[in-house]
Image (cartoon, rainbow, N blue to C red; front, side):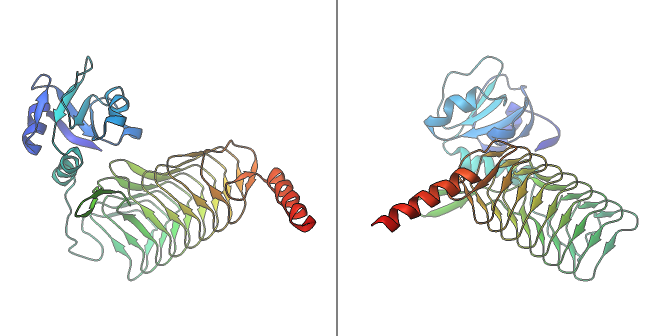
Length: 305
């Protein structure tokens, strides 16, 4: 998430009532999670296991729960609870806005786009030309839809990330201030759910076609001209490269990459990154022919008993 204007380190520290290490006029341009940070961003870290990764990331401001040596060219915000204070910043820079109409006055709809009765378009939604938005589609605030996009009934774009911190009193939610971006020539089936990024974008790229009842988690990027069949569940922060085919009821864990032109057969479970250009099957998924050989050998062993 990039801010609408630059802020100073002192201004940010004042918002969250934190100490800071660095020049008070140190520039702060945005805030992001570790996998999408860039220069000028705030990143938060609250566990010693990840201190080094955060301190040496592209982020130049680190919101941290211990005063440590500050790397050259960076600044620190010292907080007793970085998770809580990251949420405070999300509330400050991307606060929840109550809807005042089924189609928000600030929504922008392109030429020859049809929005069927009962669809909801939130604040600052942008939809391109020649789109078809069917009934009971919900497009939350700040989502961006390209040209020639079809979204079928009951699909929800922009729900919050499934991201929680366990505390003694229960689960504390990391608030979502990102967006969903759907590029040109994408088709989304009925009853799909695509969650917004925590601070960045969940993105479906050009020409991808998604069947009914598919879930895509926060900050995931689906490449160009992919095919995803029904009842597939994709966790957050996944990268699916171009021209990948995913058949029905596939489950994909968070933070991995599926290589270009990979094919994942139905009911497979993906627990690690996969190279492109191959066909995969099973749980844990492996190259399909090898997996079939394993299953055949196992069956022969069972029959020998």
